[in-house]
Amino acid sequence: MDMTDINPAASDAAADSGRRFGDVILDLQNISLRFGGVKALTDISFDVREHEIRSIIGPNGAGKSSMLNVINGVYHPQEGRILYRGQERKRLEPYMAARQGIARTFQNIALFKGMSVLDNIMTGRNLMMKSNILQMALYWGRAQKEEIAHREKVEEIIDFLEIQNVRKTPVGQLPYGLQKRVELGRALAAEPSMLLLDEPMAGMNVEEKQDMCRFILDVNDQFGTTIVLIEHDMGVVMDISDRVVVLDYGKKIGDGAPDEVRNNEDVISAYLGTSH
Amino acid sequence: MLYRENGQFKTSYAADQQIFPILQDRWALGLLLLVAFVVMPLVGSEYFFRAILIPFLILALAALGLNILVGYCGQISLGTGAFMAVGAYAAYNFMVRIDGMPLIVAMLLGGLCATVIGVLFGIPSLRIKGLYLAVATLAAQFFTDWAFLRIGWFTNNSTSGSVSVANLNVFGIPIESPVSKYLFCLVVVCLFALMAKNLTRSAIGRQWMAIRDMDVAAAVIGIRPVYAKLTAFAVSSFIVGVAGVLWAFVYLGAWEPAAFSIDRSFQLLFMVIIGGLGSISGAFLGAAFMVLLPVVLDQLPHWLGIPISTATVSHLVHMIFGALIVFFLIVEPHGLAKLWSVGKQKMRLWPFPH
Image (cartoon, rainbow over all chains, first blue to last red):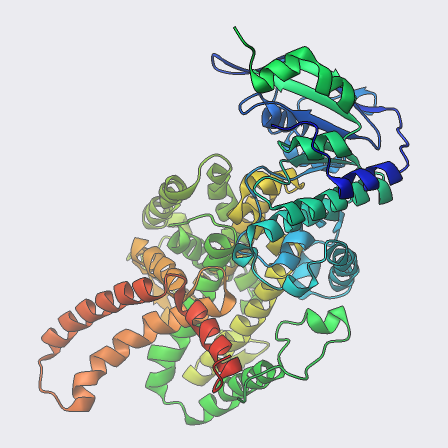
């Protein structure tokens, strides 16, 4: 794992996107999560500030994805408090997290395989569609207006992600890199205030990674979206993140700016091992 | 050569989002409707309406309803016969207990009763999936079988257990002759097919498909699984209930609970699977396959002049029919609708290789 590798395209973009942090938007306090006897997360605390790119790194099985699942309500931690926009959050279901403006992508692509790219991204806007079932059955008035209005927004996202030529293709037929892009598009369609990205660059080649970096930085910059990122490519993480939290065996072993984390003894030993 | 969309440019999203964006498809549909509404009533024989077209239309409607649940929302149901029965008996009760109840209103009320029962038996789907859900909906089947057989009130205390309706009419037009029955069913089926298509291309349809394809991801983007699954059960059972009313009132005229037995549920599930899960045209193709094929197989030796006894024929029909189902599922597991769309795709290029 080479931590000094710098990805030039990404670092330029990172430098350009004027850093404008807001207040703490999400505050996780002493989170512990167990599955039976297995401790997935132990006493983890960190916060996410508005508009920043916050990365979570750590070796396999460190609890990174579990952390995201806690944030958007898929898992419910046994202990700890979560404050979202200054308010303590009670136990909530994933769809409620979506209503609060939290969107995410998955480590293993979780697209709707039977649907076209267009429909997948349109689904991301379902929370904003207000027509009732009868209007939809008749496809008249509000229902049709809504379909067209949201289609325009979705087309903007399709343009942004440069996937115009596959908009009507069933997603199952797309190559892996494009599927990842569509999944990002679906998350963006909800116009989230916080975006959780679970290994958006896993399995990609260098060019696809650069594209994805560009999209992430653009989203952060243009829409001011707060991003929580899990990624294994240290070059990317160190380049584009504002702050990095490091997990190992479900415990937090480092937290801070990329440079601090890079030089943290515990982090280095977790990644490279220590000599005994 | 004839079937290609070259030069058909869309300049608005409304034009791009229509049900049949390709001109040739619109012509084909227009032609089909013309044949169905005008040519058939002129040339069809009484036997043709009674034995083929009317059951085809009604079963296609029921398969359409089931397809919304199974094909679009991914919830397997073996209770289709039960929901048909609820629709039929509810409409029957509205007809006999309320004087001057119009057929259309009774039909819609029957559908609503089926909706209520459908949602009730859909509640387990919030916890269980797949085959387990199929078993749970099977309970609906056994329950309604029992209820309509044993609880006299539902059948207006008919001693034989069989009930019947007579003097059907819509806005004063009697629905008695085979042609009028056929046209009535055709109108109802066309309207429901259009509405089902509209639902499946709207937000609610995308929610159903999202739940079907990946329920965790669906919840994460804000879809409430409870709402999506129960609306699918509601819409599906409403359509199935209406189909039940038509089956009982228009096709059978007089019926007993056995008309909506577990066999009916299986038949409809096969129709949906053979026709194509998650496709409106699949419901029609599946119903056509299941209704027409036995008739054709039955008549084939007669047409070819092969002297076989009727008993042998009826056994052969079962065997060949079963074999054909297996064959189709192997060749195209996504059903006849998929086969049809593959054919259209080929037609776009034909006769050129690329």
